[in-house]
Image (tube, rainbow, N blue to C red; front, side, top):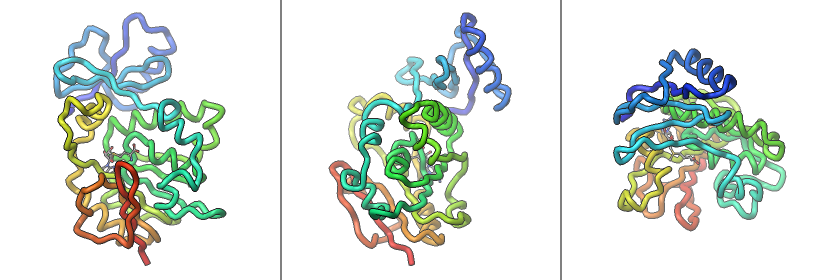
Length: 257
Ligand SMILES: C[S@@+](CC[C@H](N)C(=O)[O-])C[C@H]1O[C@@H](n2cnc3c(N)ncnc32)[C@H](O)[C@@H]1O
């Protein structure tokens, strides 16, 4: 588990990156170190590469870098084409031809599902409790706002560093609560993508996922949607109103009256 965070700034970095790194470190009261700093397994260093915030952490005894991008790769491709008929999530959260619900994504992670929902036209409030994941996601969102083709959708996304467990009941105007807690990986670790291994290293498991669902069901949201791997047990032993099965996972949909 990572218990100590620092900010790494190369001695040769340009003035802009140096300023960004020091501002970021000051804001979060983190120590700044240079490129000669040697990480141990309990430490991680944030680092700006141009305006992208990255996190260096040890994986298999090597320093390895993690950063989130909402504007490239498969998610951006899907997001750019997202519409009600081709995204299973649209059905799960209850999109209708002239209706897009306000969503709380209570387990934001890398923000990928939230981006698809925003692309469908939903306003999405993201909650992420993990300090480092929150920082990486906030930075990815800021960069997305600067991309002309995504700027409008990026403004439909908001993010807060919050533990949702006791916060899902207090939200006004939220129509759908979306949950995607961590699920223990069943594949051998070597087969799991490096990015996912790093992400899991940071986030750990979510042992309170059952409570998260119970609290969400206690809220005024009309619908609670839980993304689960295929074959995984339902959360908190609660049978959903219905389920929607996709290729690699399923959505448990709870209609909350
Ligand atoms: C499987 S990931 C979510 C992935 C996300 N759906 C995506 O598309 O990138 C689960 C995330 O939820 C966060 N999380 C779990 N429980 C939480 C809680 N009670 N409050 C806020 N964040 C939580 C974890 O830290 C982790 O980042």
